[in-house]
Length: 369
Image 1 (cartoon, rainbow, N blue to C red):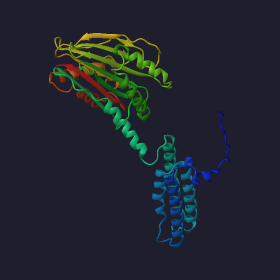
Image 2: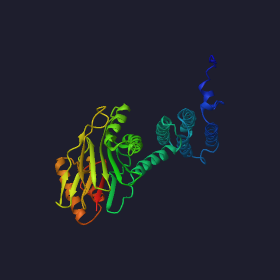
Image 3: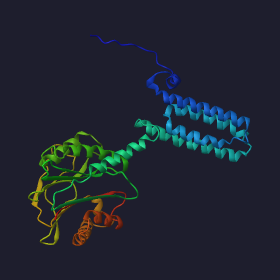
Image 4: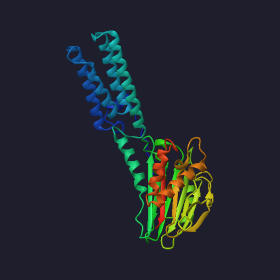
């Protein structure tokens, strides 16, 4: 059946703002636009009629609220009317030319800031404060995906993620999964390239994808599958580091795969010391499609502990990375002897010790008690 093509004349921009097409905007937005235009006209008339009783400062809340609820194109119309109002007020303000010019410049500055914010929200298709709520929900979802499952008696697992300088978005996240049979635990700790909200959005995408892969693919294929997934994204900074841990909760056997991530550390209770697990290393995720990721295997006896961490725990300006690892393991040893929370103490020490800036500090500890 042939397709019909119907040609329609292109509407004038003003008609698209105020017209009846639903593509131009919702009825509520058109009503808001009419309300703001009417309000500004009424304010202008009131200032002209009672210049000493109606101050020009009433314009500021109107400009701010319009910038929050309107999209860029109707907002430009509202701000154009506001500029006309301010321009007409300046020569008749009665407060002096210098003071009136300061007021006019302040109004223009507020409009510029709100217009930039409106354009930013329009890029992601949100209005008002829905964008802020969306980012908060994304942040909470990343945290929810990092919750650790309950383990059977004789096992303990803990994690800690802390931020520096109030930064709540980061490229570091943790995902954990316990098998339906309850005898197998998997944990993956990931550090995505980038910083701040840009890394945070990537973390959300990868945490959801990795959470779906964890337990759905054989553990020895997890890093390879995650690597291929990340390579397909085509990001300019499309790489991440990760360490993947699998523990058999019946026997204590573990396997660790490492994709360019800081090496895990093993505390052997019988020896009373830590050992860095340097084996089982592969390339960064997303860099080499089809890469192979070997795994390092061993056993956790009673009292043994495995520690996973990101580079933010051990990095410090002007210090060697080995010194950072030694400092971390020293704190972990003291905490183990006092039966404290190793993950929390390691994060706190990194934060207070100035070992990194502007990063999240995640760590995870698996302990065979």
